[in-house]
Amino acid sequence: MRLLVKTTLYYILLSLLFFVVAGFIIVFDFDNIIGQETDKYLINREEIATTQLVNDVNLESLNNYEQSIKKTDFNGNLDQLKFKDTLRYDIIDDAFHAYRMLYVTRRIGNQYYEIRVFRSLIQPNILIKEVLISLFIVFLGLLAFLILSNLLISARVWRPFKETLTALEGYELGSNQPVDLHGSTTQEFNQLNKIILGMIEKIRFDYLNLKEFTENVAHEIQTPLSIIRRRSEKLLQSDGLIKEEIVELTSIYNNCIRLSKVNRGLTLLTKIGSGAYKKEKQVSITDILRSQVQHFDEMISLRNISLSTDLSHEIRSDINPELGLILISNIIRNAINHNYDGGSIHIATFDQGIAFENTGSNEPVDNDLFKRFKKTDGNTLGLGLALITKICGIYDIEITYGFIGGKHRFKLHF
Image (tube, rainbow, N blue to C red; front, side):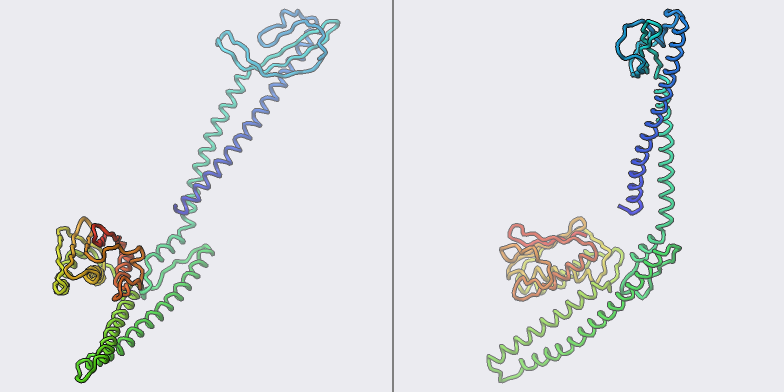
């Protein structure tokens, strides 16, 4: 969830909570004010009725829909004003309506009177309802205004931060192009940009040193390895060697070749990880696959491995051609190296993918197959699969492994 959306949602929730509480308080206070005014009105009406009784006004003329006066016996609650909400039947509307009632017992001369005064609550309830509707409209408009203003203000305030993110997304570590972080009127963003530029400079310095060190080491190691390899070949071709010497020289020669491959593999992994290879638009993976099948044809024939292909689907990807070649060749080489003489290999393309299926060991390989230096037999350090995994990770290519029908199956999903 985006930062602006997240803060706006929190802002809306807090605003709604505030408006609900504020609306409840306003309505509660408004209802109390109306209640107090109604009670004052009833008290005033009761005082008028009592005055009329004192002045010997006819009792029947005092009784109407809004007040009821009758003679009563002394009940021990003399002159105590009591208020009560009640319902009364309205003949005109043919319905019961809410009323506020004041009843009290008064002694006038030697006679006791029960006085009941009523006031309709229809108008106050309608007024409260109208107030609620008005408050809701005002609060809704205010909330919309606050949300809109918050979005506009936040978008403007956070614009330098978004520009910084955009600049960092387009930055490549191996590039000589500097990161362009625009200044801001906000002190915190300027401080953030300053820290980021310092970190980038430090990372770039370390990266260049590491890159130079790796290139130097790779170059310096390759030279003595070449010398050892040539001299071992020369010694193996000389006469007069005993069996034990031939075995030792052969071991030195094989380990030298192996070390050279490891050196090249590690150097390649470092170059891939540092972003030295650039993307290219719509490279034909199918063409690379065809060329590599032809390239390994002699190696496959020497081991009497039957090869079948179905390359009817055209697959294209935004991948560096050199890395695409390394990816395909390593998977084919893996299918050859981990196969047995007289085995089989089947390569087929499907919609945006390639399947490599080969015979080999009768058991599936464990889940850490793609880990660097994972040994799958005595002749490999697993750098080929490490290269495959690295390339797939850079270009978002999904690679899967399965063991189906006694065959090992690798799938690439572009």
